[in-house]
Image (cartoon, rainbow over all chains, first blue to last red):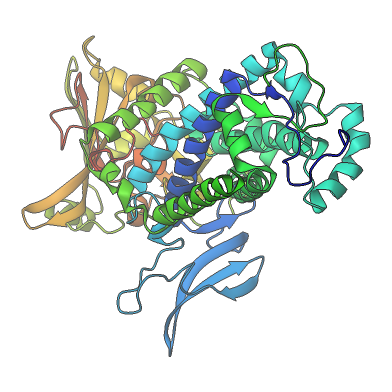
Length: 284
Length: 263
């Protein structure tokens, strides 16, 4: 019978839609490289003074630290000690003390996650500022291009329908059911919106607040973040959030179809779901 | 067909896992970036030139660094770097209570001049409560008293060819087999003539202590701590920095730090 469809056949394919412009694709990969180097050189810089504070200055004769990573001597040998909001954690092997027991390294973050792998603040700064400029350059290009080509309005700024569709999308994600549309799902839009309009600007501005030259040029930076040391702490916290975003981002790509996702981020063409209507310009 | 896709997926997933494992198993692959003079590193160092140009274009020459309230001085000024110079010249000066000390200004000037501490203290005074930002990341607020550098330089009269001030110091920041390495740094004339750039002899209403740079320390407030030379004795006006140390314009600069130091 003609209306019977054999179950073994794969589900009908949706059309190939052109989803990512060249600006989106190029800046995406530039950021991927930048964030890798910024993270690892940033941890090198952090290791030079592995403590974070609230306020204008670091307290040496009083305590305004929110995070301290160090090591202590115990009868069992050196132990890594991390103090977060006054609570102590033993972080031996990861933070404070790492490496082989015979020759432990006394750095906050282990050499495995810093550039370079040994202690060299000067090189960490050279790498960090180079990729900082590249990161900001890509951000500027992306904002201008996305404003002009409509990517911002169409795919990033959440619309009314995205707000109403958000609960359903959360349920879909919880069930690992991913709708492959022409644009992003409400949850995707929201997370990209937060990255582009909150996390990226904040990490750049807190970075600038650590520059004594920029503090003279834009003293409002110090008021906005409540001091250079608070800005430094916020910079670190946003780094943690970006790392979390990266992990979730990768998991989502793997779950939603890594080949399709990779193709769209390399060629721009994305295989939409079978329920997608075919429009002019689509490919079969 | 479906088996092929699964295999391809498995292959991609496997290589992604292997790739991230490779990255995580040690970032010593990027250790070559630490080699001074490496072409990749030198390219990356150009970002510091960009920062210098951008900040000079953005920040007016006279724009001040933030000054704080007296109530915001909550601790002593943290001493860092050299805190106890051991060179013979400094030790004898210190034993004499810095009485024979003279600040010399030489190089591309109309007339070489020198000043005793008493003469410097009799010049117009400026007191400022500012935040010291260390390159390592920490900050400390303190009150600095001294005489602005600009008018002192004017007494020597700069030749038109002068472009940089090189600040020579007494302290042996590093002791090597071939002898002591003395601290020095340098700045452009914008920083030298900035109204908050002072030859500081007072700290938190006291005479500047040895650990913080006695008898005289320069403050260039819109830059990091390594541009605030302690134990200063000579300011040399030059048009080129290559003749000093390893030619990068300062002790820490010779060791890979950015020369401008405003970031």
